[in-house]
Length: 315
Image (cartoon, rainbow, N blue to C red; front, side, top):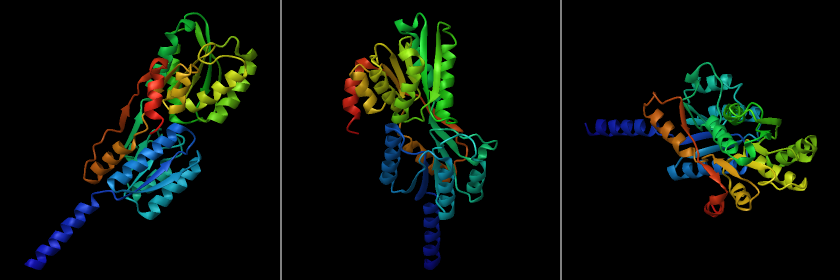
């Protein structure tokens, strides 16, 4: 009788243990921006706090690297997988492999396009469309935009959810203001170096930028690179050209405090906690999680930039 009780107790302990994730694979886009690095570090810190072994993979912005990483996680028999996808398409085969292995997948940040939504548990992300709307609403409220306002747009990675949806939201608002239009638009891959390079080219194409009212960048890193190009072209960013972006990284707050940028919509990098919560609940039997868990950041302007920079630069 005593032996049976011990066996029963051990079985119960095993069942309890198996309902908690101890090893999780995280396929990250890369480290192309300050925001992305903050995102990765926050996930690592949250995993450590919870006693989770995190298998981390930096895809260097290449989908093929992410797919290899996910297949490696499956082969290792992890308890769950988190994916921040480089692009939206091309995920169905590897997600089917994870499903066959009974490994739950949570999508974070960007989206995936699949016909069968049972291939992932949920997506946790900011509302990128609303971020674009907020950026455009602020820009269209400025005196410079009340008459003709020619805008240069720096797009994110082609095919990335953030680039697609931020442009959609921005253009929705812009359509209500016929006096303003995007005159040049090109991808700068979400990076500072590309932001500078592309902005240099676009300013040259626009006679040095003398008729440009504003820069709209899909993230702060591109905007920061573009600010350098604007200065080198002999213009004053933040004055001659209004600068609005998305992310809320420390360097951009410094640029706003210095008067070189005007506005940013914050993108929350702390997605690890919610992702681990969803995985924990799923492994304990909760299978009815909403397919999208979204948040929207605040709009920050120059008046609070110095204080925000001091709060964020040491994190």
